[in-house]
Image 1 (cartoon, helix red, strand yellow):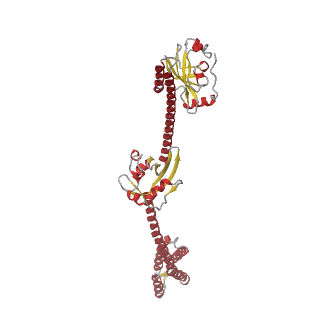
Image 2 (image 1 turned 90 degrees about the horizontal axis):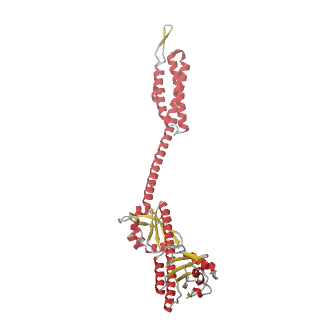
Image 3 (image 1 turned 90 degrees about the vertical axis):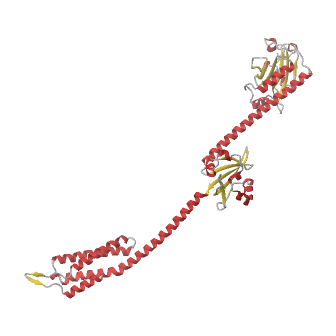
Length: 440
């Protein structure tokens, strides 16, 4: 027996076989139909689609056998893939390559074999479409041509299967990309819309749904103009073209008058940011939309607060002027009377000490204490008018108390010393004091 060895391009052939991802896959009706047709046309009880890997031949489809694979070194197909054309063995017992092959000499008793290599577009033989019989025979030219054509159809079916797998993988990748993009869009605080190269909406986030009043299904596939006021489309035809032709990130300036249109037709001011994206699925534009109504409400509120602050500033300035005027009044109209009251009290104590009662003397001392307190408060006002604002009320009350205590001293009631009545201050002095105090 001559074992089936590796091909001259074995590494490339095995890589191609792996690329088709068909080994050990479930049965498929499309391949079974071709196998049955080959057995029927060639009139054989056995037909196989055999794929040869490094150590075995595995049957993608089979008619007339129960096993799913055999070792490569005893296979007929291992020899067939070495050739660029159909291989036919009319009687294996008479063939020097196979006469002692276990498939021939053993229980299988294979006598006839014909196989068509399954060649990829770049010339790699992955396996065969073959037919076998337990009796010697020979194919007719029609059967050979039919088997060759069916072999090419098997390969076309494998190409179609590979293309389908790639499309499914691409669709899965696209769905994953869409899901990732959707998650990114959902994380944005702004309304986000992704537009494809045909200027139709491919993705939106929930903020866009809420802002424009449409559901996601109502927006997907629609032209972007559905979100733009009609009069704006007519007035600015060049803007839209610029949005989708630029290759650099572009943001519409905030001071450009842009508007959005809700589902019910109402318009509102917006700021739009545009970012072109290039992906394996094509070119897109990611549109970020900011509703300016909230910003304008905030700007109006800030302007109102500024106006209120200006009014308060004017009021404070007026209050400062009032305090300054009050300090001037204190300096001019209070300090001079206080100096007079202090001088008068000192003169009374000095000149009339022997004619004063103890109670009068105590009142004069109390008067002196209150005058000093009043001077202290006035000094505070003069140093800082605003700090002395609270002292203004206390000063007025204290000054009133000083005046009352002073008035009570005059006229001083007469009293006696050793039974002799002592005259009080003269009426002239008393009148002077009264006039002075009331003038204050």
